[in-house]
Length: 225
Image (cartoon, rainbow, N blue to C red; front, side):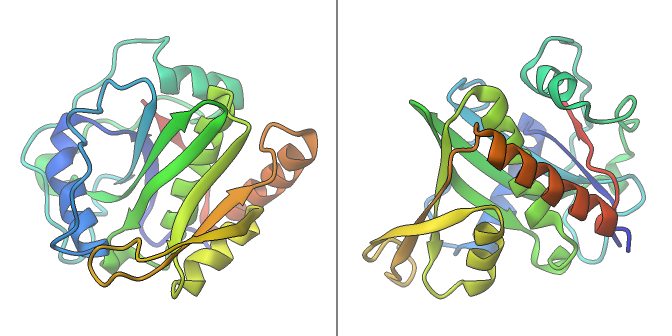
């Protein structure tokens, strides 16, 4: 079935930060040390993607950012090149939504170190979970990592979060170790997970099949600048 709340992915903008921090605190903890979103907007070793609700689909109980949506004018920007490589989008991005209709559904942050891409955080608004948005953000981060030239992708997950671990395992992440007391809110351990080589032909075939399956269930994958 199509997404109950249609979304598309794009790169983080400064006017998104208030909402993204709100989602971060909801997903992790009010005491969680917030990511330096504003500082890293232009960091070439960092990638921040947000899942945006399409106009008119702001959903129940969502906070709305007061700033207007800006449009990108750099045809050779990072996500534009990514869209060209993977044939994404299928047309121009949606027109900027009215302020009252605009909202962020979730986000993912990725750091690049050598030939490794590391997912730092991935989170979806609680009211919108179960709509395939977390998996869509994972797909977007993997596409970005392949375009960047990364060899593998890694992440940490709470040892108790079996739902997240099953999703990552679906995309060939394997548990490779434990970080003791990693989460500051309750000192819970984290399982370290890493993929098989994402630049390998075998992974590419599997990844395309998983994306096709996502689209069959939820609808087209769209990534814009």
